[in-house]
Structures are given as C-alpha cells and as structure tokens.
Image (cartoon, rainbow, N blue to C red):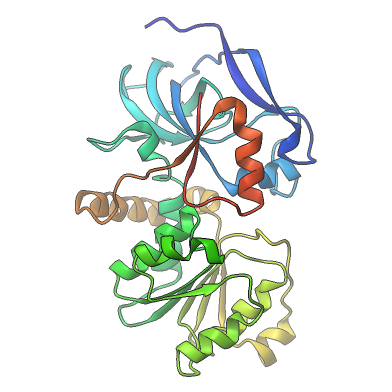
Length: 330
C-alpha cells in the first residue's frame, strides 16, 4: 500500500488555547517503529483533554509546538517490526499522539478493532468515553441496581455514555445539563434532568431523593460547582468519582471530609487506569465489548468537522456549546 511522505496535520503553537492551533500542509508522515502500526486516520475524536492540553493544564501534557489530538480511528496502512496483528487493511481505533492528522502511529498491542458493521467515525469513544463512564460507574463507583446516580455534563460524550450505562445497571439517573440539551438527555432514559447552571444542585438532588442524597455522583464540573456536587451525595456510603475539571480547580480539605462531607471521593483518569491497573482496565473493556455485542452500546453519531475546523470544534467544546461526541475528518 502506497503511503505518502507528507500530510496535513493540526499543530498547537502555544498554551493559550485552541485558537493557536494551525493547519500544517506539509507535515512529515511518521514511520512505524517496532510494535507500532501506521493508521490512515478516517476520523479523530475531539475530547476535553485536548482543550486542557492546549491550555497547559493537563498534567505532564505536551509542550508546544506539538501535533494535537490523541484519539483516532482508521485503516492500518503499514506495520513496524514485530507486529503480528493487526494487519494492513484492518480498521482499528486507538489512542496515540498526533491524531488530528491524516496519519498517526498507534501501539499495535493497544489498538482495538472497529466493531463489525460500524464505521471508523462511529467507533470513536470506544477507548475514551465509554470506558471512562463504565469504569467510573462499576469498579470505582460500585453502582448497584436501585441506587441513584447523578451525572454531570450529561449531554457530553462521556455523560451520555454514563446515563445509558447507569440505566442499564438499574440505577435511577439524575442528569445535569444546560437547558437546550435536556431533550437529548431525556431521550437516553434519564429519570430526572436538572439545569446544570443552577447553583442549588444539592438542594434539587436532596429533594428528588427525599433528603437522602445520591449514592453515586460522576463529577466533572469542578470549580464553583464542586462543593454542590459533594453536598448532593448520601453521607457515609455516598461515592463521588471525579472524572474531570471543566470548570477549573476546586479544593477539599481534611476538615471538610470530617465535618462537612462524610463521603468517598475517588479521583479517576483513564490513562492512569490503563498504566497502573491493567487488569481492571482489561475487565472494563471485556464488559464493554459484551455490551456492544448485546446491543446496549450502539454506534455513535458524532458531530463532524473538517480537519481545518479543529480549532472551532475545540472552542465550541470548551464553551459547552456542543452535544455528544465530536469528530474531525482529515
């Protein structure tokens, strides 16, 4: 299979935000090393981590200038030494550097096949949003049937996955989203939908739970909303799984945990789970593909942007003006 030597790619030039991302027309096409595959990117996933990297708030994030993006799906066009699978021509999805481009390198051992009958674009989220939601709910959040789960940013890609999975596992779901996105969240099966812009989230959750509080909260708001989320959880047995910080940093002290919020707080990062708890991550992926086979998880329908419009997609994601999964099409 013929592979060009040059490609188009998005390069982040500063840590001041996605507005400083530019399209490079003659970037070099990388060559696969030992254990790597070269993928012709058909669709790249846009995630809030891309915004965090562009803002310089992602821990140990890349230093500019760097080629942006990390989630890609497409066709294997070349393999490095020692690769026994996947093969050239296979459709895969994976996580690596420089996904906002026409070609990217992926570790052969870490890629996943695009599910049968799905397109590359539809497979976006299989290794990012769905595992994040599933791990947060099951091994970390320990959700059980009959419990109440609060999902913040419920209209986003990970939020929608969390609503779908929480309902599948028999939970009552209280979803928070901005008003224009409520119909989307209700269509996923959420039992109650709250305005994420209201300051009295805790009061609303307590009202809906008869004063008891939620059993599990997936916390991604951060900032000023963080305290309201903690106050919405059932004392002693309530679990808060922190999966993001879209609204900025927030602090909680040991005094808070003794006298104000007697709850379980779990910090979660999907990359750390992959590296430090591969058995748990493997179990999550096993359950995930079982849910795909059972039809619980269905193909995504991302909002698609052309590669040159990557800065626009990231800016809209940062402004919380988007719904569901976003994709760039090289």
